[in-house]
Image 1 (cartoon, rainbow, N blue to C red):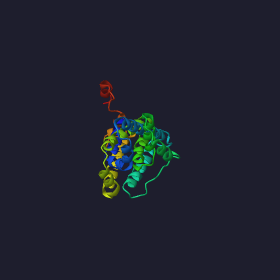
Image 2: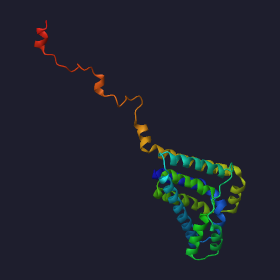
Image 3: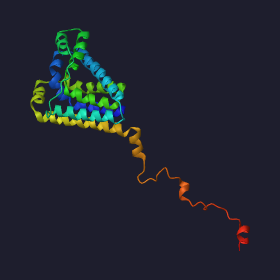
Image 4: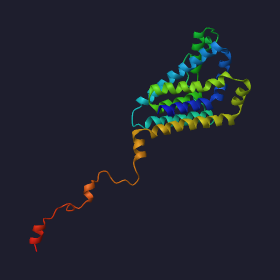
Length: 241
């Protein structure tokens, strides 16, 4: 479960990196510089870890059968991937005051200020983050959710480090590129959910149960005639004649 979630969020971050360039390239440029850039990325990862923990915990407390959380996660990742592709409107989950806080922190120069700026910008509405968060929901674990979203954030770092205006313009204008990214995110998420379901007790039982196996409720001795193991006294048998 941990490996599949980490792999899926890493792939989501990797294939979605161009989208991050379009959304956060300006923030990355504003924090250019070794120390400032590290502090900003650390802030991003802190927010992603917190959101991932919340998503994983939510998946754990959803009432009902064990398939409910993966089902919700599947619907969510399909919806958010469709939003990335421009097929449906992208949902905007706005945290009150975050935009104002990010604007205020943009002018901060110290490491702590850049770290807070990274935390604030990562809480801004982003369809790619929403799609990635659907994976921790399926995991049903706050710890796995936090680790998965940290890996997601790390996968986007290289693209943001080498951010260029040309790539940013391409992602924002070319709908075909956005749809290719959306398909990649969707496949990564659904693969993770499918692997998690296969590792559940019910899934493992289905994998190991041989086809055409006899009904366990039927006892082996039921198929044996009751007198199959009876011993006939040869003397008594002879006297009957």
